[in-house]
Image (cartoon, rainbow, N blue to C red; front, side, top):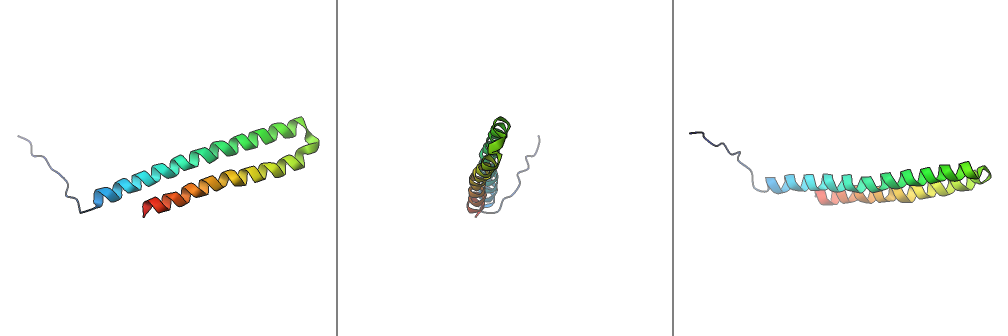
Length: 86
């Protein structure tokens, strides 16, 4: 009836492809958390500055520290991406 065509694979080709897909999903998942965290930090800092404008300098400094710590999580995910890739 119909001939079935199957693509030939080299040894280890499927494993390498699945590792690449898994690494991409891991990095994507690792980037979601810090993105949400930075949004919450900045939103709360803006609310605090609107309620007490005289404390804006201290709130801004604390906000930038929170952003830096939250962004470190994204960098850990980026490193994990490269470790899972190899």
